[in-house]
Each structure stands twice: as C-alpha cells, then as structure tokens.
Image 1 (cartoon, rainbow, N blue to C red):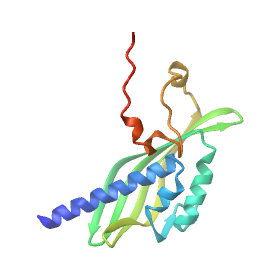
Image 2 (image 1 turned 135 degrees about the vertical axis):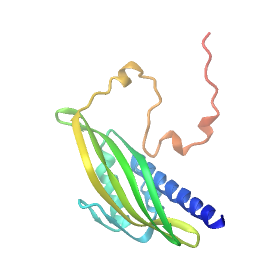
Image 3 (image 1 turned 120 degrees about the vertical axis):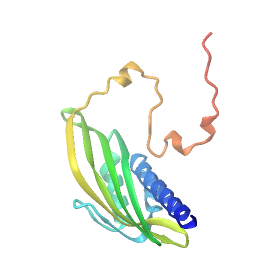
Image 4 (image 1 turned 90 degrees about the vertical axis):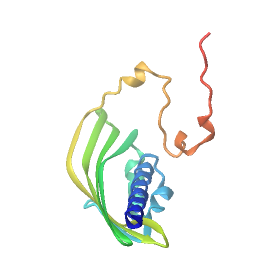
Length: 175
C-alpha cells in the first residue's frame, strides 16, 4: 500500500507542476516557468528547441503582445518509475491576437510528452516536448465584454491569482 500511496503523491506533485507551467504561460511569469524545470532540462517544440532559460525568454516574447491566453489541460497520464516519470498531457491553448484585420482567435490543441525527474524529493521537468494535433483560427468575437463591461478580467503578472488578500471581500448588497 505504501508504494501505491507514494506513486499517487508523485502523480499529484507532477500534475501540479503542469498546472504551474500553464499558469506561467498565461500570466507571462518567466520565473514561475523556470522554477518548474531542472536547469539542465531540455525543451523540444519543433519551432523552438533549447534549454529552459532560452524557452522561457522565447515564450514570454511570443505571448507578450497577445490580448489574452488560456492554456487548459485535458487528460493527464503519468507513469512513475522510481525517481523518473513519463507523461502525456493533453492541452488546448487559446490565444486572442490583435491583427491588422482585427481580433483573431487562435486555438492550438496537442499533447506535451514529458520526462520528469525527482531530485532531493522534488519533481521537475527534465524534458518537455509539444506535439500539435490540430489548430484553428478565425476572426475574434468577444461580445461578453460589451455585455458585462464591469466583469473582473484576467491579467498578467498583475493578475488577482498572485494575491490572497483580495479573497476576503464582501459583496455589496443592493439597496
């Protein structure tokens, strides 16, 4: 039973590692991204191949001018083999880009094929690759913001997720 519990804990830690990676992309948080990789790790995306430091700089630059991004995980399969694990993580990445023709929505769907390594009890990426299975783009359409102009909007490094003090608010009651 202890091995099964250890395996389950490893999978949860690796899952959360993937969640923090997704947050780093959406919030443009290079430091958070780098904290998920071993310094000697490798990133292989086809359009970019290099070390984590180079990839973080590339990703932050590539996403900086987007109006919004949201990276979502689908099914996550992690196979733990001692201090090494292998993962297949389905993703769907939504990007809203301002072009000369107006807003464009770009959706990219695929899978991350990963190798994770545990050192001194900590799991991090040793290798991450991105396999794209399909993509779609078209004119952007965001009427929600016109219908609800006072909605709380996501941000980058100034996003509300980086604060905890904002989660004690009391809603205003109508007169």
